[in-house]
Image: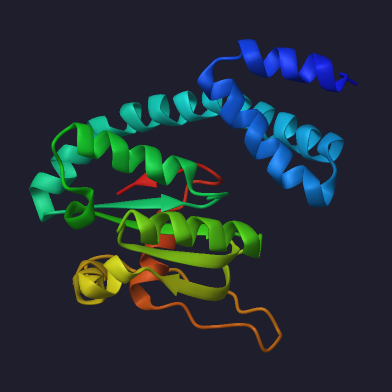
Length: 208
């Protein structure tokens, strides 16, 4: 561990951003200990940097998928996206970003049905979509078993009148029957959500 003299020499020669980082670490370490705080800082930084490659992959996959999006938008005014294993919503965000780069208003021309078996992932996806004003139904359930435990509709879904839009769209395609788990947490999926599940292709994200 560096001595106080060594720490002072570093601060005297450090650049401004380095001094800011040290200052924040020191302020938090008064309660938690500097070794613990620095260890957490390094771990969080490593995870963030490691995610950069995943983010680029998500954007690449989104670009590939978007070749089919514009014809669907021109045909009926919007495109639907099914993400059966949403995680924290990274792929959904990537699709929204690509649409925005193509000059398409994803807040008006895209609706998302996102599913995950992990409730924490459901909440993360919901928060991401809500903050970006993405119309979405985020489902806590098992996409492989067509099981729905709860559905979280984003503000953009409700404010944009997407319930009516999707019911009209659903009328043109039959929905599969959804299995309800035998406990009090089970809920019935709306027709428009059930229609999205009929498009499911395993664990792959689907545009339709």
